[in-house]
Length: 311
Image (cartoon, rainbow, N blue to C red; front, side, top):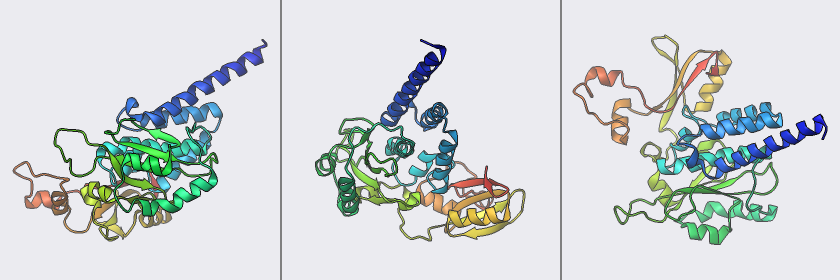
């Protein structure tokens, strides 16, 4: 074997190894830790092996641009729409979609374009009532990728797609229904939400009644003016911009190349809203005093900006 043949063999072995690692973490993310660092590191390593680091970086920026990457990552975005126990596997589904676009995702089942079109057309109405895991599989068949435990009692995400890397993933997120009917016993999981729209992250979902009931408290109100986004310049005394959406705030910041923090605020007093939503529990003597209330932060999402760009 020539030296060039040996180099090619080693490169092929390295690619196969990284490809196995990528697909393993996307199916068993909980085995790799509580956050998404494993996905980010392994997908970046895969990109390095394939010589497409720029494409990977573009995909990572795409997550940010679609509001699917919060201050704490994709899991932070999911924590706003799903209960905590369902977020880890759901987060992996977002990276699985990236892997699919980059040609790395090994599918357990490939839907035909017609099957995928029917699924996309039916799913919005299908989740209008509560659904079990068995109903999901009976209706739409085995998933293309099963993310998380196979047991009926643990949260998981089932994803469906075609062989076309340009096709998105339709992802069903499952978790415990509210409330537990038998305290102390695990109950079979149910469908909470399906991510099926090609839209900004908050608008990409449809929820079952159970999913609406399990949304984090601050996400339950459906009115679009529940929160606003306020820009506060670095070391400035007063805020200098108020926006109805994150995107509007980011566009303004980019136009003026400002440095500071764009933060999400609930309508009303930040302290009162946080207590009502259960995000803050007064536990010390100074909690709720005028000085504490006056300096209380919103406790919602915030973005650090330098010269109008995310830090």
